[in-house]
Length: 369
Image 1 (cartoon, helix red, strand yellow):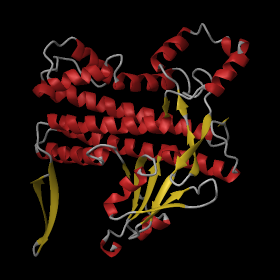
Image 2 (tube, helix red, strand yellow):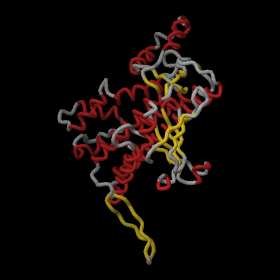
Image 3 (cartoon, one colour):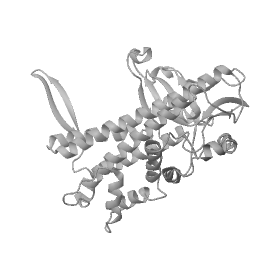
Image 4 (cartoon, helix red, strand yellow):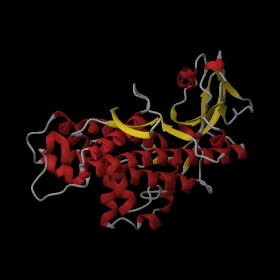
């Protein structure tokens, strides 16, 4: 049965730092690390495409997948092919958006539109960067979980810090920065091309989400896409919250010490057949905007030395509004969806440049994507 499957190995990154491994042309998926009783957790899948559904039966959520299709990728000579997984109808949201913007860039070049070409290439590049930042963050989770598994001292809810912990938060910082770069690139494109350029003002350039938001707020004739975008930028919107987290880190303090110290949390998760496995959680604080404003006043810093016991207790009790990896995956999906929708504003249909070998040599041509 499996001999007709693609010759492709898959390493599936899961929430909490876990990994599911599927060897080429095998119907067995093995969970890493082993269960707390030292046994392997394995499932069998009926078809190549059913792997993700099979993993979900374990109660686990997929972050992304490393595809290994060549020997050079297996031995480390070339990077594996990593894709963000989005738990929606279009599961490859980032990949689809990246391809779309690359094709818009090709169309812009053909039409000699320098602004559209520059923006589309930047957006395509930044979508790839966002994808890889998520992989880096997920890999740092796995390193932390591997260290924890070697110690073999499972204790649900235990807070701790070791040599891997700060690295995870540093990877999350990098993710926030690249997320907001993409947000700003998309904002610049929307300003120039939404409603056929109706948002543009003479002598004014918009290159950030903040400036686009100001433009949207004073415009009474927004289309449905622009209204939705403004809502996402409003106080309760996800784009507003993303920017607040980035601002907190960039202008105030590392996210894991912005209030009280945040530790890695060891968790024990349940699997079928009464099995259990370890995972890790890295909390991030709630209300980043309020925390940033509070820190800017610089009036409450004495509490860190005068109320040490209270701060320490809060640190050990804090579960966090979000987990770093879960939040990063959610934001990656939302930004990828936004990028894909923004692509519909392009004045040109996406095209692909193809190369054809003939008896007279190699010729190139364009075709619609």
